Image (cartoon, rainbow, N blue to C red; front, side, top):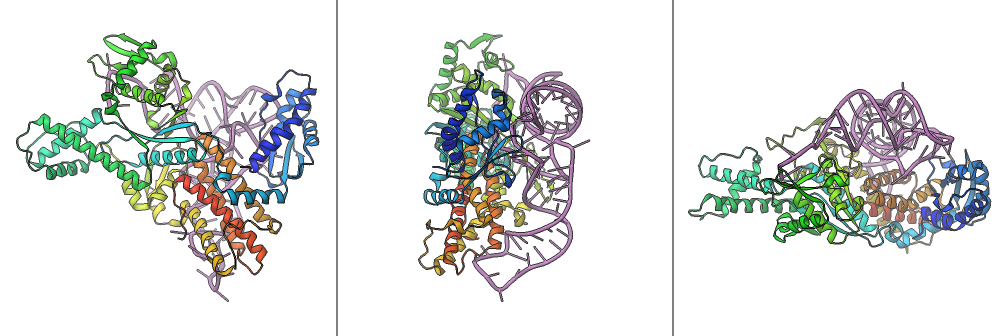
Length: 561
RNA sequence: GCGCCUGUAGCUCAGCUGGAUAGAGCAACUGCCUUCUAAGCAGUAGGCCAGAGGUUCGAGUCCUCUCAGGCGCGCCA
């Protein structure tokens, strides 16, 4: 479980360095608590500044009322002589720069090859239960690109947290009880009538895509002998048929996109199980429900929301918000340590009221963490593809998947922070594959695999798990790669705790960007058996890391391309 | 009007929760396949981090204001 970053933090921070600091801090006159000082460790940009660096002396300067360089000297005097360091230097205004010995780094590399994901994935979750709800598209039409981005993010985050030691539940919330589903039913109903030559009015806000007619036609074919049936009954049947059909299609799309869910929570079920009423009663018992102007309100302003929210309208109907209260109460009752919702960024105004619910139920606001996903703009040859929801024209996830592939789509969705806008040029992603970062990373993996294929044929007695290599044979370039590999766990841990899978994507591009030039400059397999073994070990380590990262992103790591 | 997000190279975007001289890909120009895959490699260029103040040893990062763009502010969903 040890690695470059952790070694520094545990062996160094918590034992040697902390001890050193304690001694120094004790001498300080002030009453500040030394434990309150955070010990930061970072990777310097400049290679000359060592492998790891800490600005701790500068942070302590004020507390200790001593010049940073003096503090740095005291610290270094306490910790020098550790076998894992090649050298420790004080630089600039007071940075302490650590350089590890080659032997130490190579031992860590061996650990990596031996332990694989155990080495790579830091256990920051410690078994904590977390639910991630994502996509949750209304079953009223096909998934569009925005849903795809949410799906890619949700799946990657699930993988990430799962690897990081959380117990993750992936949930899709089905809005099967609201007005939108009714509207879908009425739209299909109207089309159905029209198919039978009856001039039936189409609902004003109805769904206008071609798929509406397809569903109507399918319903007609599957129900040839309806006989005489009154419209209400028929509408009910068609609505039921239509949304289930749409939901099945959504499931299929997600499956083909490589995104799976553990649970599907139905809104309708919340009503049937009385969860909605129970949620209202609960809030009422806690004193956050009041009546005014003939409506029932939730006092969300008690928790920082702009205004209080109606949950039962004057006409007795619930608002959109009400079942969501019940839904999130249910999440809480299921006992998660953290609840994550992934929403489209256009719903950001909804966050404060939802967090108010969490607080009203007695939990801290950040018990619910909402990740917002910005819009995706689709370009074709540099020009934006026009989408009009009104006319029912939009680009579906299915179309893009079919055109550029699920792996590319996912990878591109994960090359940005989720809350920043994303532009995807479909021509670029498809035609000019060299511009496409996903291939760059996958190609590195495939190339390494083909080296192994050759090694198996030509190097007698070679085993891929070979860790008996002589690290002294590594040149500077190889050592740079080793260090990059050993930084993966720290990057992984940061990505997990920040809930930002895109950091994995960037890391993988950087690693591939070190491997390809290396590959080009050096033959891995040569006459020199010892060098060959060392280089194969390095390749194996790169392969392990690439595969681990790609798995988290939900992208294939192909054996050959 | 109020609130949230964004503003970094020509374009698309990173920037490790405040660290050292600001990063990548693409686009552009020039080279490299009798070698483990050319989906690759080598080289050249590009910046008032929107602007102005402030916080401190130190700011792209935190605070205030201004400007620009996006989104949200219903007893709609």
